Length: 421
Image 1 (cartoon, rainbow, N blue to C red):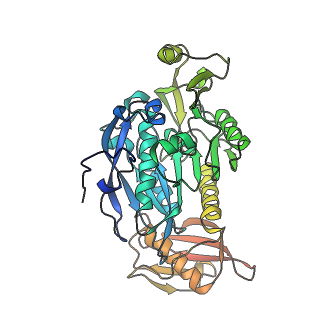
Image 2: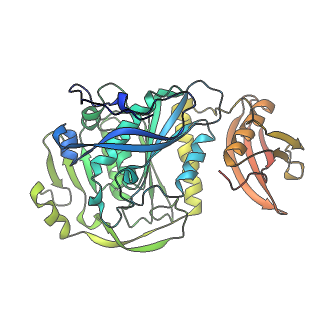
Image 3: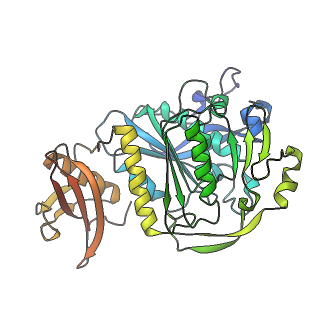
């Protein structure tokens, strides 16, 4: 149930009282109160007269695990809004025992996409929604408030970087609550907001070598900037990967998409609010920003899927989250989903596959596999997986390391429910 806050409290803007009531089994769409600051300056300086109240929402998916408290990842979409490929990341984290909360920044504000005009939604709105999502999840009975991370894509990747900047965080979050990890992926790093005051929580910067939209080099330089002030950060570059390498579409050309890459990096230093063009060192007058960009902004970029880059980035993001949230150990469920049973062989080769019967979709399949492995191989460690179709049936081979250090491959017949969420 949505309860609107009647008065804006001067001491806090967490708006916890206005959010939907949260119970241990609450998931799916969750509405929450947020704001749309007119500019990032208005957010950073807490000029609340320029913060328009906004009802926003996200979609929470809880993993099928027996733990009382689970970690969570806030997922921030790109300039195309929440695309079909987001479900890949929901599944990637759910299968390892991590909840996901997909924030719908654009839809909440009546916008479909911003690729052709980023001014349709101010960047400050994305960051505000991310912080409000953090505070919302911290109140959920099933979420461990100390283990909430953020992952963002393109425009959302910029948010994953910005959320580690302390002056921005403190303007919204009036407590010590902060994201436990940050994963910016093909982020926009050509317009950055900076302060040497950062949260110093772990960060993983993922970039594509062939990205001509936001490009890799500015984000690699930004990652070094974070590292220089003490943030533990690692960058990984994927060969052959264009922008949106996890997209559910082939690489194609977007003729009207805008990119500020030719302008070089424009840096907003938050404390003095000084804007610097890093390529020339000149100070840019805020009143002349439009003129600045008109002289260098380009249109026309490429975006689309690179299967190898997606699969590797999925593994890298999972490994990073596993290390931060679980100390490197997998967290499988204790029991298979209701109605699921195991028949067939022992999984020693696909001709003797463990048949998962009664599954309704991929989430049931993943939870069932993890439950089976925990029961049969206590203390195992996940190492790799692959999916293949043979003779009209679908199989997944999972490579594990047993507690004794033995490498073993277990084959599951996942035909029933495969392809459904």
